[in-house]
Image (cartoon, rainbow, N blue to C red; front, side):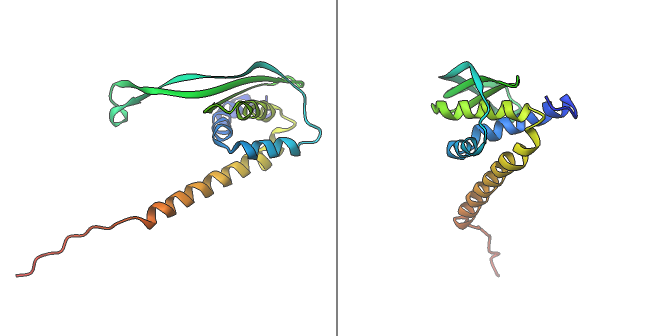
Length: 153
């Protein structure tokens, strides 16, 4: 864990796990290939694909209901240095789940955390923000403003 405080890692971890799960697998693979030397790891739970139930709520506060099932792949790894990482991704991409688990573990390593935060996580945040901006621009281009004309007498 991070030396500065275990609680700060607990607060930050859900954020980076979400970014890793939503990242493009090619970006994670490129970053993994750029690591020199690549750290060793052991698969605690090899990547496996299954279904999870997606639940919803009417208006966000109503009674929960089962919306349907979704395909998800999960993986767990232990780095040679000790941290354990988990990866859960939507879909069937086993390598994506494995890379997410590897980077989750590496981000818990106090020696690697700051470097990965600056290089990998910051890059994923920029890519996510750029994709969101592109989506907003595309939606704005098709926006129709309706207005009411007052009838004159």
